[in-house]
Length: 251
Length: 246
Image 1 (cartoon, rainbow over the protein chains, first blue to last red):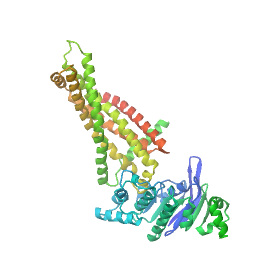
Image 2: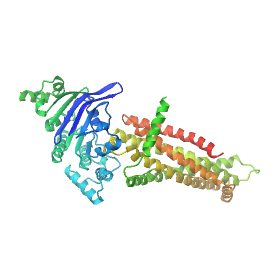
Image 3: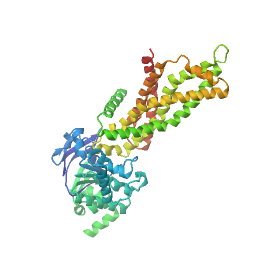
Image 4: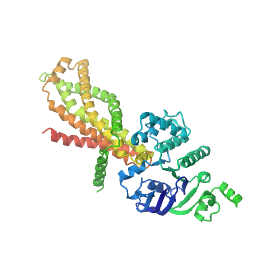
């Protein structure tokens, strides 16, 4: 479980996060939604410790990561897997080397064990047989799946995903969503997903938090969205004609 | 003030570069790869440039001392001195600052904007040390080797140009090469190349690492890196020459 308490973050004179508090539960897919530029990515990168916060606390179980130095944070980060918006696979390494990278760095496995673990991770994301290819030789969807495989290589307790569906077609998007959701349940991970894709919200949104201009505006599950009277949330969610029609049918 | 803060930021960056790596084994592997990338892959350009500069130096020197009062073997002597003292150390380093510098700045800059550096940091890896240290160490090791290589190739180019062009024959040229050789000049130049190896990798790595924005910014950082590392080579050349040739 991750607990965010009263987090504020500014860049220069611009306040990006205003007093955000939220509990992100283990074994569930926790979604952070909001418009582009609303502060989702900053919040996610703050949660993971890539950005320092100006005030507030971020607890991983009982450890407040805002009080940790680089070396202490280093050990905690080995329990965190992150899926970046563009995949962030290392261009100069093959798929196999990319997934093996965290194992080389932080495990004492033998080469045989590492290869076995990589094969398991690739198999888990339904991508067997691409180990020798480079990131530039695979599609966007495969890229994301390899990034998921790398993120779970060290068996993390926490999985953070920054817009995992950006740039993907609807079919591949659903595939990635389902994969993340399955992995979350299977390994009882605390999964946090940043998205503005409403399909994802409807597909896997167990806990949903809506951010508007750096402020937490609404929190609930995907089912509560249709009955919410939050003006900002409705303005964001029902911007599309399709979802408006669905809401009308549901009502 | 801005300049001072930049120097401070660069100093902190260099301190991070030489902090303890996560796994020594992997750092050696990276070092080996960088030695190939920065060293072996630069041999072709060093050979081509050194050969032709050596050849042109011979022709120009021979043309300028065309008088019976000056022995022709001095052509070999002057070409050797030019190659040993300045060309093979400073000019080759300047050329490598362009080739290696733009490569390092764009490679690390692209890693920054595609979040690959964030991914490293997130895994708990000191990304500065992991990415930059092998490059700097490799350049400091390989630059003196490229220098020696350049001297030899330049002299061969000079000897061939003199012989084929008829301005100085091989025997006279070799006689000039052996004339009044000061071995300290080689030591002096090797020391210079070690320092040049440092600046032509550290400065571009710094600009690449702190890129923010998109592809256009990577290009700008790359240009800045090449210009500033070239200027740093020239200033360092002056300072080291003053210190070492007293």
